[in-house]
Length: 297
Image (cartoon, rainbow, N blue to C red; front, side):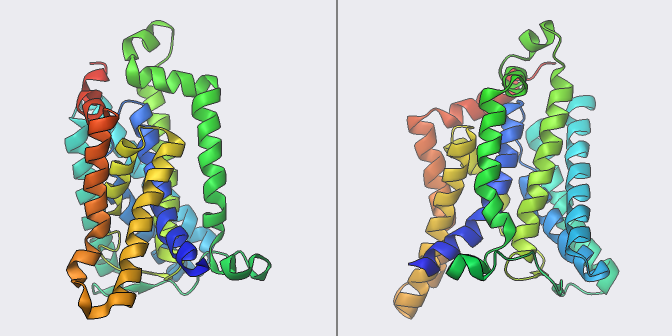
């Protein structure tokens, strides 16, 4: 049982961090389809930074810097150049995927995997079987709780929600929606960096091209499925990771008796079903469709 729980936490933690980034952007009125690009950029920067410097702290700092710059670029394109946020987000995803590939080829001369040589600090023997998990896994519930408090119990959270839902009303009381969106996107960039770093340095301690495998889009779906709530988004992301862990367990149990491709597709099928359920029961898709209309011109 503990092995399954450890597998769920390992696969779910990066997804939760990135889902929280998407949730922050959604609260500010931006539906963030650049999560995949930021996640892969964070994973690449973390692994390359550790391999080049030998310092995990330097790798994390580089990942945060890259993702924050990417988030700032998205804000500039959406707010200053008045681009469609959906198209801009997809462009950021393409930039992240292509940029990570180009970075590895430029530094190492090939598309081979980058072995970091060191990983994130572990919890240690004091936590028993869970000691193999990284400190970012232990910090994840704290981050979710702090974001809930920030968004639901502080003046900043109320202002951020107002900028996303009623930007003209927020501006009338002296709140600048554009600045609040910049803060939300930059904060999301930090979370994407943590998610990418956990993916690359938490267990495998390496980076390979396309290693996110659509997790950024799954995180975006978790935001919709979770109703834009920090705890709901985290639970939705955790649900997707449980399905993924169940698929891996089924491969070990059933072997060739079950179609391997079907088992690998289970997390993505769960993502589609989750979005459909959200649209039917919670109006998530309707909110997503009208999200662009909430932005001020």
